[in-house]
Length: 184
Image (cartoon, rainbow, N blue to C red; front, top):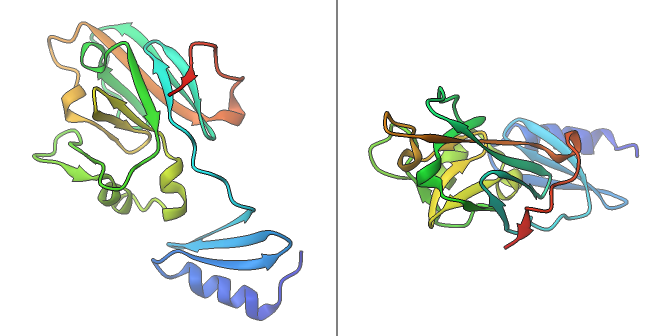
């Protein structure tokens, strides 16, 4: 669908601002402009529903395939994109859900807690994507925000026996989730 020069200029101007803006292009298509990026979208997509994930197991959360594997320790912590956590602290089942207003966690190495809103801002996650990123919760505490942070309470230490390795990748890249995953 062609756009006018003035609409294209408006999209470019809005993309340079830190605030999220939307430009309706017609035909149900809109340009989402925020923090230097422009994404095209059609219609509105609801926020993904919460799912349960067995450890070990696999679940589909919105556009993500989230997996939990168990390995005998020690396993070298690999950072937020591929999380390695103390399996005993994590438990046998976790909840995978969207960010909620007021969510807080204690990222690895931080004294005190940080709001997920601040975490997203620090990592320049566009507002339109924040409710689509998997947040893994164990025992009411945030254990992992996919690709961004691991919770200090779930740190692997010298006494960690079994290690849970969590990954999240776009669901289009993997087959459908196993029957162990179920809606919360």
